[in-house]
Amino acid sequence: GAVVSQHPSWVICKSGTSVKIECRSLDFQATTMFWYRQFPKQSLMLMATSNEGSKATYEQGVEKDKFLINHASLTLSTLTVTSAHPEDSSFYICSARVIREGSYGYTFGSGTRLTVV
Amino acid sequence: SQQGEEDPQALSIQEGENATMNCSYKTSINNLQWYRQNSGRGLVHLILIRSNEREKHSGRLRVTLDTSKKSSSLLITASRAADTASYFCATVNNQAGTALIFGKGTTLSVSS
Image 1 (tube, each protein chain N blue to C red):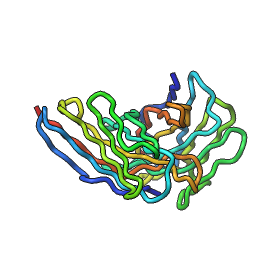
Image 2 (cartoon, rainbow over the protein chains, first blue to last red):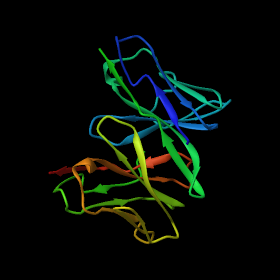
Image 3 (tube, chains in turn cyan, brown):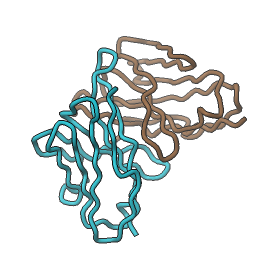
């Protein structure tokens, strides 16, 4: 259980265009989702926390107008990379918090490889 | 932001050998988790250790936690080529929200 489905798994887009990445919780309700970015051979960096029905909380240095996050329902959060540039090319992963072993655990989407050309 | 450091950054061993990875963190925690990531894929949860636990086992995995030193270690025994992956520790910063914050990770390569 506690599966997060992330789509697309990879996308190539032209500079200046926008790309939307979706994350759906399939068998649970996710009031909070998290978005991470991972550059090659590096760790996951938290970009923002998305809360259902309210504005996302962005980490320092992440442009909220460039990375639009929408969490309109308990099962869907989206990240839109607007006016994409080659430096936005990265691996984007979403995550949701779930109860695990009597404590909070986290489940992850399979990631989206974005290449901006 | 990142919670801390992991060492080594890269580790290469032969099948059958044990692999030990260390992780340090900076803030107070309720628990610490270890994750595995195959190249270009999502993360898989391996094991969670609570702040009041010192050691935990799961199959070939052994995790220790030293809250006085703010450090943890992950031991994989009798490694297999399929264990080749990146391993990350992660914690939740009690003072800053509920998101997992990841260490820099250790890339493990197991050759047969």
